[in-house]
Image 1 (cartoon, rainbow, N blue to C red):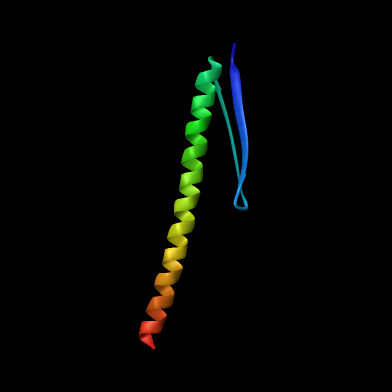
Image 2: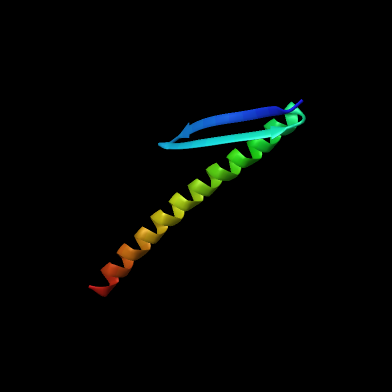
Length: 65
């Protein structure tokens, strides 16, 4: 038997989808959980870094004036 675990997650305007298959249902769920956690953390880090970069650019523009 092959089991498939899927998740559709909507967080703060972002959509995340992960589907994993394994021979054990619990293994499929664990794989899916690891991937969705990694994806959500990556998106949060990306947004934080973009925000910091924008603030850094504004600060630099203000210093030049």
